[in-house]
Length: 115
Figure 1: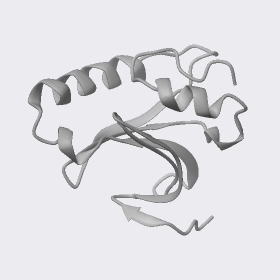
Figure 2 (figure 1 turned 120 degrees about the vertical axis):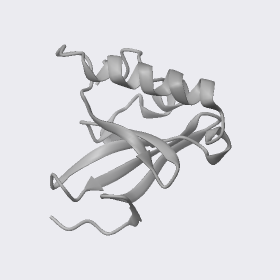
Figure 3 (figure 1 turned 45 degrees about the vertical axis):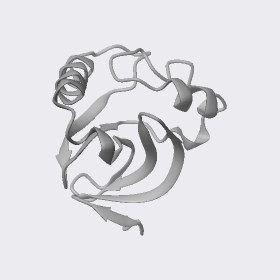
């Protein structure tokens, strides 16, 4: 599978699903694993906020350790081009509750469990 999109590290940002004060959620293609993921990238204005960055990393790490059937799995998180990101193992573009979930999207929550 070769998805078009804007390059972001090993990912291709294919479709913007939502944008808010805490970042953007994209349907993205992971070129390393050859799969579609949901990718959240934090806004550039948080790049210098060390407290926020540490909280993000801690919550992403904790969420990545969850293995429950009603929790969307975290595949990857880190930093690309100075921007923190997290990828999840579900393409949320089909989800009927997408808009509500994108507004309340927060790492560490049991997110998208309705889908």
